[in-house]
Length: 287
Image (cartoon, rainbow, N blue to C red; front, side, top):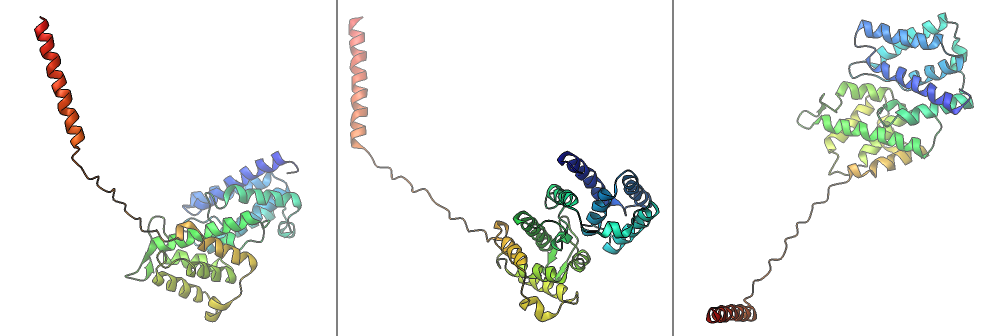
């Protein structure tokens, strides 16, 4: 882990393990296989590498659509028990990251989060080094969440229905519960700032009520002062081109060209015709 090449190789391994978590709950066999892969990695890795894996799995849960977060964390408790049997102590796993370990964690985020993985828990994270890039990544994750809500929202029933590329009401509530209170409020503030031509006011009301139902004080939703980072994320979301109203395209009709009779053109047409007749006569007379 002490060289750039070693850190890159470790991130590749961590990415594969993290990706496999999405299907751990598909079947009993998948559950056992996933746990086995994590255990094999731990048996063949140093404490620092296992520590980074442990923190990534807890901080950025990669959860499939049909899996509850409580089921995921129950699985991680089983993994934690396996680590204890292998001699890894919780105290060591919970320690702050060293500079080398931090570089691995930051590289993992750079390679995965916001590209193929849009994990809402990343909005919470202060585990990774903050930068303009991380704020942009968080805004893209928030944009994705709002898009999925818009895709699923049915104004007739005022509910989120499970559709492709969407999110069910249960999934949305589960996602909100995984967020810190200030980040739940950020979800509403960002949605509120989106142009009305894009954001259905009924959907905005549903998002607000869902957040209040997670034990957030009603008045806090509208009045709480956001952190500087949250303000940046909100501006990135509301300023995104995706949420701008589509300008009605102006149709330009090409002015019809008025056809004017050109007497000069007619004259030259007859002149050429007469010239051709004269030439034909001269040819015939010379025969």
